[in-house]
Amino acid sequence: MMKKTAIAPANIAFIKYWGKRDVRLNLPTNGSISMNLSAFHTITTVAFNQTKSDQIFLNGIPAGKQEALRISAQLDRIRSLAQVSFPARISSKNNFPTGVGIASSASGFAALTLAASRALGLRLSKRKLSILARRGSGSACRSIPDGFVEWIPGTSDENSYARSLYPASHWDLHDLVVLVSRRSKKVGSSEGHSLVLTSPFFEARLREIAGRLRRLKQALGRKDFRIFGEIIEEEALNMHAVMMTSKPALFYLEPVSLAVMHKVVAWREEGLESYFTLDAGPTVHIICQGKDSKKLAQQLKAVSGVMELVDNEAVVGARVIEENLF
Ligand code: PMV
Picture (cartoon, rainbow, N blue to C red):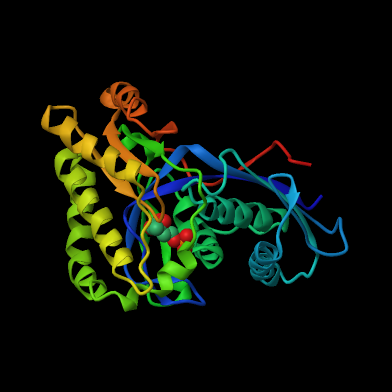
């Protein structure tokens, strides 16, 4: 039976993917580094040849037109590799609500790519899976390998992929995901990527990025939390500076996001060490060491306006599972 199920984690980038050198292939302007998140995942079941055309359910409801087109385009890439044209039936579920600042495209396209390719009997290498997932959504390539991951930007379809730098057990880092708003964002990442050249700061960002990547990799290898933390905050603010100075300006932070960021800096001065990072939304990601995660979670939950907090550790990448969604 041509049916398989895969699970894939969301990931948080420490060095960000913001800007594409090739829009069709999702080749990034620069390399990025991330950690897979243990508490946020997508589970996707794909079965071929059960329906007349592609039938796609996301969190139990039929996919919208745009979503369906993007998913069928990804299936076409996998069908063409397997040299078949079977229609697919797909059910995909996130264990987190969409539109709260956790990207579902990374975990979603990673799980879809693995499930669909295995359902068609393809045994692709991790590198090839990462390349394919990238075509669905750039950051999805980082949800294929395990633990702490680097996306090598590359210059072509064949050499732009993510690989594991260290397994999840390398370092007991936590990402305390602090939800501060349920409003879904107005400008998604696809449009955001296309605006980078309108920011006068993007050129300055690119001048610094290679050095920042190198320093972050060193700090990750040595588990030097202070240096690591300083770099990720600098990087998140740098990306948001580009966003805010794009035309039109992209302004993702809410008052509570800033309140949380100020608290983290103040607690650090008192000796409780954590650092923030941000994606394209108001959600704040607080990175800390395992020994401090409980205390920080408690304090963060008490900040006025914080709606929910989810504690994540590093975790393995996409994998096939036995359980089926239909
Ligand atoms: O994969 P996309 O196109 O949704 O881009 C993700 C962009 C950020 O989340 C803001 C940064 C990153 O590297 O994950």
